Length: 273
Image (cartoon, rainbow, N blue to C red; front, side, top):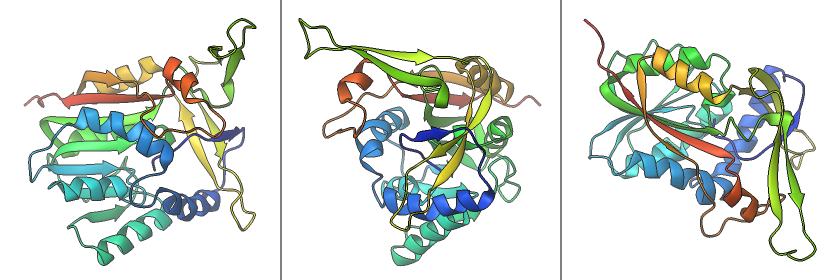
């Protein structure tokens, strides 16, 4: 499931809380993504994806309500989406029935995609989903299995260096002589230690509180895990706010100085015989 910026608590939610999040989040994203995705995260992701040849076989890992899958399908890709949230897959399938684009959606764990054949995709994409998956190493291996040799994997995550759940925060220093140009810092602790945390997204109209679990892993973990799963890192992108970005609690000038997201482009190395 893709994620926007989120508040934090230190408790792992029950599965029903994840499902409660799914329906709410699917509506938030709609058919184009929310403001945070449209003007900050997605442009960096699509910059690394580039222009895809028509008929490119794409796997959307943690596809959510399918808005990224639909965008890629409209551009001529043949897309399959996978997500473990029943609510989000239901929304994605509902939209596919309403406006067919030839997308197939699977309900399941991206770390165990047995229905998908080896080497059956040219490209995999995971938009703000991998850091919400407990067995991320297993996901990288499974994506490496289903993507063809020299195929690509483009993924976006919360920046592991600067967005460390409850262990990171903003510090803004406003100098008297230059109040229009504050000095912005990110305070980070417990960076090296992988850990999980609960993210609280704020109350809905019903008064319920949507939550998800996120997993922090240091940047070196991603480099080592990708390599172990047969991937070579090709490029990195740290998205900057685009036109129209407006943060409710975070100024665009802050994110222009300190990125909160990271896009990784990797290539599947040829399998050894």
